[in-house]
Length: 71
Image (tube, rainbow, N blue to C red; front, side, top):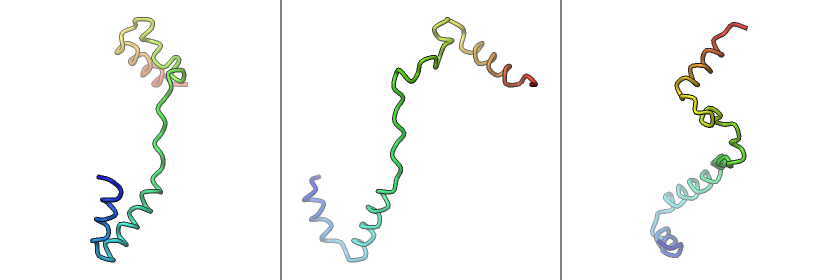
């Protein structure tokens, strides 16, 4: 649907419906932008266990064991 077609449809709305539409449009501008996706360079070392061939479950178990050790 083109912008012109949308504007023609808006003209058929009641005053209250137009006010509601304007409020919706203004509120939609306040939505925070999406987080950018990580670049490949940002993921360096992200899954080091994959490069070593270590089993994923063994790797996760090791991480959990490290978290549970008293310090």
